Length: 615
Image (cartoon, rainbow, N blue to C red; front, side, top):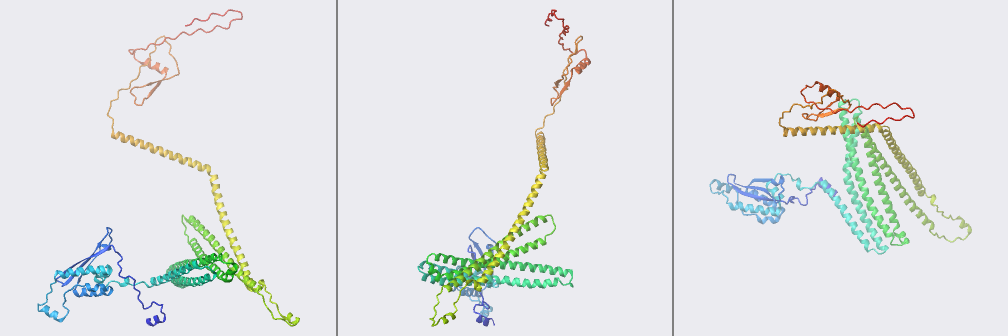
């Protein structure tokens, strides 16, 4: 059945096996294999050991791997045949090896004692040399897999069909792009309009092939996501009906809700991937069409207007319409992408949980939603501009066609009588009465109204956002102005607290240093002398004490910190009276006599008395 299907569809890969181009290529050329071969007389087989010999200093787990096994001579011959099928140049290098007991006569000779099972060392060395040659010819992968991995997985030798298909589509796109470059290279030799028209024909064919290969690759990449989205949509509807069923329990309902959320997530992921692929595909189409348009506009400068309008203006109009159509498709896909992202943000806002950061998270989502909404309005305005440009291009083409028909000169047969001339209807060309023109103008009016509506909504949104920001800013300014004094006081208190902490820290550091210093350098024990007090002046008989309010300060020689004692003259005299009589007395300074008071004012005309003598 698969053969018949393959014959009906030659491009189908069913029933075929895809093998890699280089299935036995050595992925790691840094390593080399070393074989050790010896004869095991107890098993009557060859013991072969193989291990890696790395060339560089960096080693990994695979570099330390080794293999070992027991092989008969028949196994060696079979491995040689397998490797010779892949590399025929290895066939003559198999050395001469003895025969084994594979026939009846060999077994009879063995039981009769005529069979010699001893193998010389030459055979082992010859097989070791042969394995080195096989390694050089076939490579590490084929030799190791043939000798030591008979039951290994063969998937490493086959291609993945999905990857093979994708590479096939990508190779087709690459070949079409190279062909287009070859065609564009012919433009350099075009010197007249006839040559450039031939290049245009080839370019149209090459661009059509490139667009076909691109759309095939796009559909191949798109199909898996379309299937996932369709399955997710069906499963989501089924689970929604089950959740709304009133006869099920809470446990089953919660399980259905969990499955519904999983399928919803897969549906959204597939939709996002589809939109990304659409944007990528239409962007490539816009680039191809824009390149054709730019090349035609460059050619328009080389030829006259009449020749260009006659031969190439129609192609330029078609390319411009294609550019506008592809740009519209790309912008609409981007618009859907923004709408999908906006819907996700709404869902995140709806499922926000109460917490400490609820307000900050809500503000972040609102800002993100605002940015997406502004981008959505910008994309919608670009869509309106592209639709307007497309309608105007179509309107110009139609008006040009009507004008050409109006300028066409029509010839009539001669009339024999004036009555025959009056019966002839003269065609009237009116571009305004054409239904296509009317339809396009109605479309333009609709575009103008929709664009004005979108622009007004955008302005309102931006103004509303600006007003909210102004309100927040004003509130912050009011708070800062009303609480500036309190904030300054708090700042001063904080600064004072910081200074106090700094002082306490520095004092504690100084005390610690002093403690450490005293511990490191302890002072010797000293005997302090008794405190010495200076003798006070003694009062003599007949002398008057000198009363002064000024206190004297004396320093005790025995005080450590320089403590002072303050005494008044009155207390000093009292202490002097209490002293014993044998203490030496200090002579007192004689007090000068007090001068007599001045006489009363003499009467006028009397003589003044002489001044008193100096003391």
